[in-house]
Image (cartoon, rainbow, N blue to C red; front, side):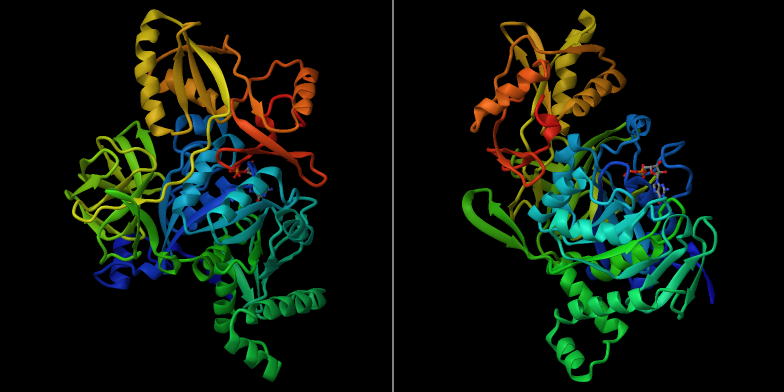
Length: 566
Ligand code: GDP
């Protein structure tokens, strides 16, 4: 049986989908607001690009960092080959609407990860099949735990020499402390990788050639030499799954027969949403194998906004008063701004996750922080490299609003008569400082104004003027973070600056044990930037130390601490 994966067989535009699902549009249980998280280079961008291709919204499937990138739509992101902004992209798959909130993989953008985790409902964790669990995967994994984000794992790069699915699953257990349950097994590994065996439907899926994944073969047969391993892993899957559902468990224990595909899927969904286990899939995004089943798994196992608890917030007039909103369109409107981005073509875009109620373009909402009304004049959906103007949006949607007056990341926009301040994300404190010297007087005049704009977009970026030294000091999450700020100053605001160590030394406060800190700093020559944070550090079995920001509780990546245990 050879089947074509034609984008045309799927509803690939909002209009088509509305036709399919009636006038009211797509029902909320068919929404998936997801993020794709990974260590840098694991293949997040490639996987995202393939997803956009299969969902019919991306026009090109070229090499990720060449030409017109899709998720990485800022010029410097392309140049650096990393994803900085947290753009949200809307795609459609199998009658479902998938909003992909971009989560950066670089440690300097921990804040970006936090804010995307705050507004997404589920995530796909992408792993490099050879490297398995890497340091940043651990950091992001912990953040996802903190925000209660259900996950599925995708072991990517199965085509690489040395890719080892089984080793990676073991690493997830030992290093991430999760309960990984493979729902697929790779057919071949490295050069011999041709597809996956689906343990749920008991079918093998092999892709014919590397081209666009357009053709694949689905067979009921067990691939050669895999009978034992399939039997073992399917039994493991069934046993873990049926435990999630009393009825399924009883039926299984009584009859000894495996549950139907539908029951099995239902049980896996329960286990995933309840954090009992994490389904694991595999493939190679680059060679176009395994991405369609990954999309199916997003639909089958990741939560819809209706699976979430009611959204919590506070009464702006009485902060002790906790309020709840149901995640439905019939409630009063409330949304959380999670990203403000300057778009070179249409102006300031405010990305908003709508938690309750609905909105029509032209409606006025209030920002309880500023007590200002904001008009939702133009609303857009971002589709990889296209934008779609929309006239209305409701609970579950992630939209971008053009040209709001005074709304920053973390602000709530809500109904004027029924106000609420939604719970914010945590903003980690900046950890490094540098002095930023404008090259000319003209640059000097523009500098403060430009810094103010950048700070409004990015709550973990700070700037100040040191009266004594007459220097401008900028603070951020890491060297790369500040590099990018300086780069944006030059590019977007036409302000040229040179950057150096500030003349004033900012002393770090470390609660314990102080001796180690200074010894290590001296050993490194003490040339690094000083972190102005209160950190305590605790032995982390076999891995040196872990640094914890005492104010926010956030784990500080080791490379932020100059000269220590890198
Ligand atoms: P990101 O940093 O996580 O966004 O990773 P990218 O998607 O940019 O991928 C990093 C590098 O790995 C790029 O050179 C990709 O072409 C390559 N890559 C991505 N997926 C695969 C894969 O499945 N197999 C192989 N062999 N290379 C891949």
